[in-house]
Length: 517
Image (cartoon, helix red, strand yellow):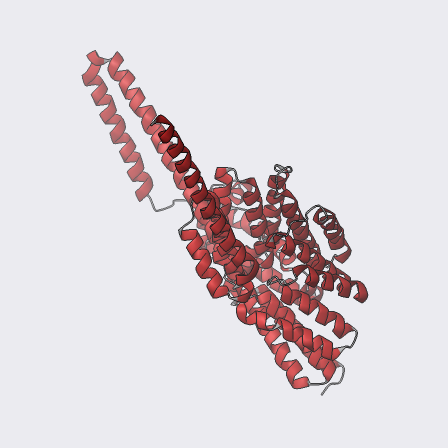
């Protein structure tokens, strides 16, 4: 009987292990199916499967994988805000549970996505985090592929800066790591194929057409039959090489291979690239109507992308402000709790040591409470500000002197700092702004900074070729996003739209000067 029980226990344990292993295998199979094929071929079905995987995920690791899969799908369809939220959730779970590989991969995904919407400083922050985390797992299985991803992201930043040789340095290093990875997993194949595609982009921009063509073909060969959103980018690269070599029918064939991928995703970046290539193709063919059609599509898609970038920047700013507000509320709450503990402890000690003087103690406490309530009521109801005439004149004069020195261009200026410079307090200085400038301090800063940069753009047309982040720093804004929000609030236009209007006006004026009547 004892032997029978032992055998039964072993069998049940083995059976349970087999079921758990089968569940894990089924999850990974479905995950790989979506990752390697469905995202590119049928994004609706991919999202349905990924939602199911997330809903029935067993344990945090499966939950992280499902969230990252959903983030990839949302990214491929252009829903960047949702993609960021999903990846941030996955990153937090991985961080809390100590899944270093997925913590690094999630940080890398966030770096890529922030770069795609023009938030380069945020992107570099997460890229650095991904690199640090990945180095903690050098002996782990996932280290090599994640390292390649990180080096490729560095290359993307170099490409954005038009530093193609610098990008090649990162990609060649990534290629050395790729030699260490011989896996046939969908991710491994995609990572290695991406490296060759990016090398092709670098050679294309360096006018090394033969090397570019070879790199794109290597990338295509690595993908084999695996469906991927990388494939249309390879076709577009091959089309660009053919266009540069005036092999127009071949270029048209490659672009025709890439176009169906626009229907299966909503990648603004892919649309911009393909519309630009089609416009170039039809211009070379002499079909001006089609060339203009795709040029207009290219311009419209650029505007759409700018709108997405701005929406994401706005949401990021709102999220950070909300975090700061919550932090302040938490700090106030903790301070109140500590104060109450101190009061309770003090009352306890006094009661214990002065029980005999209970009547006196009660009277003292009542007096203190009354005085405190009186002070609070006075503070809350005293809305009128009485300021000496001489002080008011002095503050007005000091403000005018500071305005002549354009104090509002200092990026770190605050009402508190300005009050210190003016040898006064916040309430007095705020009063001066409202009485003599008709607006509060923050509105004053925004108006004067935007007015200043508009004047600079009018006086110095060379600034039209500068980056938005540089213009933001010129007029005192700490970030690109805050500058864009303030500029649109004052003018109704984004900085990029306003600068394009000025460029168009310059072109019109130039054509008149050269005799184009």
